[in-house]
Length: 397
Image (tube, rainbow, N blue to C red):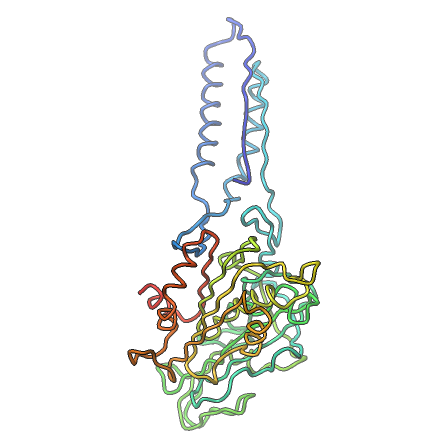
């Protein structure tokens, strides 16, 4: 794909006095050389699954690790053969590895600029696009979802659909300090919510489990969190990373890693159809897409229209109406781009379909089965799914 190797052998005249042993040695080296080429061509590259419609299939990215020995071997054999009258001309083109960069579909994207051993120290900043707490209290222990913005000073560029890691101070379940890295999908477009390319935003649900198998607060020990919620009458487990993020305030420091992820990148086709299936905070990458398509100055065309000319359809599943995320933005896109954007919510604990079944995301999709099937016949339709693991079974059914 992105690299090729071609060589031509121009053999000089062999003199009869050259020994058979030399010819044998040359032959062996040639076999080894050709064998190396075969190894490079046949070695399995790292897979990069991408979900596309109408079929779910996977494609592969190039495997840089299999090229590291190719060029030195070619040079060594070439020099040896030249000493015995064999001239080898070869041309090698390959993409050299760069730190913090990965080649995906022939394009360089930012990749793991900062790792767990050397994370970037960012700063929490106020967000004037969304409030800190996005949801309203539903009575559930884990009702709260927050929108958090981090200033990375332009040091961590990323693309829509990628993720970053957060390292909470800890201790975690195993008592480790700092806690183990936790990955979160990015909820802002590449320029950031402030469009300065200096910030990144996350959409994080506070993980609170009452009277479960594991607890890090015994009865009477749970104290109010930033949202004022506490459950002193229960044994409580509070997720280390999510509660650290949800309790953060502007000015706080936060250790982040990444960016990473190539499975959820948007296609380059401006006329593509994008179908987005999300539950809860799985809305994060979808929001990043929609900001790029319908909001940011970076997505504006010279004539004032948008560079995205296709169609985007969002299905979002949540338990309560109070749990719906970024509805103000969705309503704005629906109003301003009625021919290009459509949004449907599935509120499982409040709504039911005509058969009296709970309105899960797959139930809502079934109501539009013919339209969806028609869109999925198009070769440039792309389907993205993010959210609770259980939704995958429902989608398959």
